[in-house]
Image (cartoon, rainbow, N blue to C red; front, side):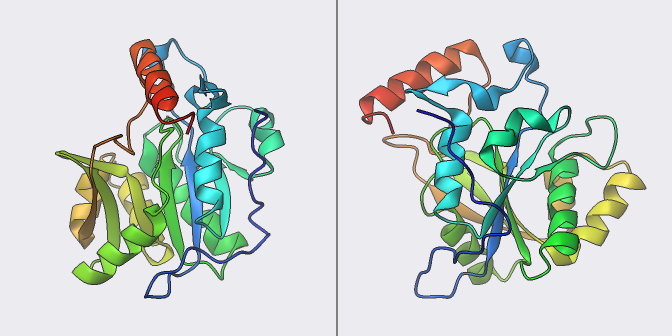
Amino acid sequence: MSRRRAQSSGEKRPCMRSEHDIPPTLGLVLAGGLARRMGGGDKAFIRIGGATILDRVLASLSAQCAGIAINANGDPERFCDTGAPVLADEVAGFVGPLAGVLAGLDFLATKQPGIEWLLSVPGDCPFLPEDLVEALHRARRSAGKPLACAKSGDWRHPVVGLWPVALRGDLRQALASEGLRKIEAWTARHGVAIAEWPVAPVDPFFNVNTREDVLEAERIAAQSGGG
């Protein structure tokens, strides 16, 4: 399978709809990790069931989001055939996923002012749920919170989150002036809603961190018919 071409951020399409109107949301793939446990490189390009993890992530997000961008450092040309804008961290030093989230929020504010919400997902989760955007928006509306993140089983996944552009100034302050690095330390300031998914038959937030995880992901993909 060739790498899926992501929907350009300039091509507007509606997000998924439910009984409530879901606001346009940009999907951001966080692919800026160093993959130390895998010996370095881009985990997003690991092939699972005949497709790269990035293929799978882009396929999921393209059905749910108004556009897609990729957060990654280094040479952006390695993502050129996705058609998605590649956003580097503006905060130096590989300070973690919050820097990628800030890059995504800045991109929305300057390039896509009509979109006020950002969905972040890691670039190493090959089995993301099809209702991710809808469920996160529903959770934050129900809880009356400005932020939302995913949970499966006993595990929260703070990197799988919904972020409003309105909070980008506070996030920049926390990163640049306060040295804050942990997602949950920052989200606790504002309030974060939780959207939950079951872990059976497949944990939708299973992530590939080791070579053993690659084998397990291959097994899961084979059992589910490749998907």
